[in-house]
Image 1 (cartoon, rainbow over the protein chains, first blue to last red):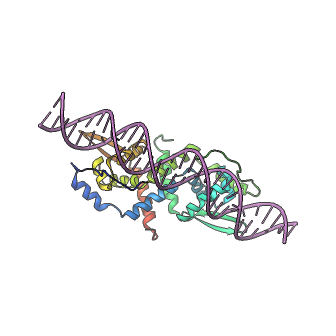
Image 2 (cartoon, rainbow over the protein chains, first blue to last red):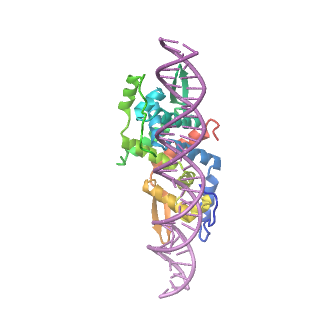
Length: 123
Length: 123
DNA sequence: AATATATTTGAATGGTTGTTCAACTATTAT
DNA sequence: ATAATAGTTGAACAACCATTCAAATATATT
C-alpha cells in the first residue's frame, strides 16, 4: 500500500453532525486493524478450507494436504499464518503434528458467514 | 497464484477414516470460494472501516472519505467492490450518493468478529 | 450554455501474498 | 549410524490489489 496522499476530500458539503457522531463511535485504529487482519486471514480459499476441516476434526498436516489436494509445504505455510493469528493450535505426537481450532469463537464467526453465503441464492 | 503442482503429499500414513469423514462434510467448492471471497472483502482496513461507519449511519461518499481520511476516489473504488459483493446498497439524491449496509446479516458477522478481537487481550 | 460539485472510472504503479522448490530439522525404525 | 518420514522454512516468482492521478459522467446552479 502506498502511504503518500495528495487530495484528501476537499470538503465542501459535509453532514458534520453525522460524521462526528460516527467518528465518536469509531473503534480505535488498532482494533480496526486487528479486525481487518482477522477477516483477511480467513479470506483465502486454502485457509478457509483448513479452518472448515479443523472445525470438524483434529488433523495432521498430511491429512489436511490430502483433503485439499495441496502440497504439505503450502499447507504448512498457511498453518503458520493461522498459528500466528492464534486461530489454530497444535500438539505434537511423534513425527506428526496435529492441528485444531484454538477457539470456539472462530467457529461461530465462520458459521455466521456460511449462513450469509448460503442464503439468498448467492451460491 | 500459480496453478502448476508437482508433489501432492505422497501419502504414506493417513487416517483415512477421518479424512473421508471430513471430506463428506466439506461444502462445495463454490461455497468455499464465496466464503473466502466474503472474508477477503471484509479483510481490508479501508473496507472494514467503511462497513463499520455504515453500520452506524447512512453516509455519502464525501462523508466516508472525511471520516477515514482517504480520497474520494479511493473510497469510491472500495465501495464498488462492496457493491459488487452486495454488502452495501446505495441511493441517489441529486449529486450525492448515499450508501448503507445491504444486509443486517453482515452486521452480525462484523460484531461477532469484533467480540473475538476485543476479547482475550488481542488489542 | 457555462460552471461547479459529487462521484465514478481506467490506467499505472508499487507493495503484498500464495505457491513452488529445495534445503533443513526432528523423530522413528532398522 | 543410516535411512525414512512428517513437517518447517527461506527465497523466488507470478498474480493480485489498494491507492493515486487524470479524465469522465451526472446533476445542480448561475
